[in-house]
Image (cartoon, rainbow, N blue to C red; front, side, top):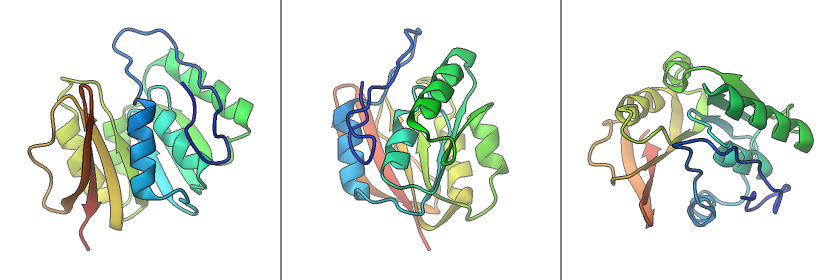
Length: 178
């Protein structure tokens, strides 16, 4: 698995062999960042369920000012920190141990430009995370949501903008209404 674009393009990411870990496929990440644009200069991002960190690292590679990556699995967190150290990215990317939903709920209103939500399937975390993300996003901010099924509901503060499907992955980008 590699970073698709930006200053770290083609950089290999370490992917620990853990049950249930399903990194966002390259094709989906490429589509997402084509939607977002290649330059995320100055954006404040949160990868609430970081896993391999592919989404947050893609944002940092494209110029995001700050990316917080939250992961509760200690092995994944060690791999994230090692990757960030290898890239010299710790001034931009902050890997943190913890609960992504709790971090989202604690984020100040309007403090984020982009939130990545790819919680474990069947965890029941996606809908509450969407609610929390809507509150934390700046007007016009975006939330990327990935699940096994297409989204059927979202908070009133969000509107669907783009959607794609790749195999079993349904990905949707929603925008915070002003």
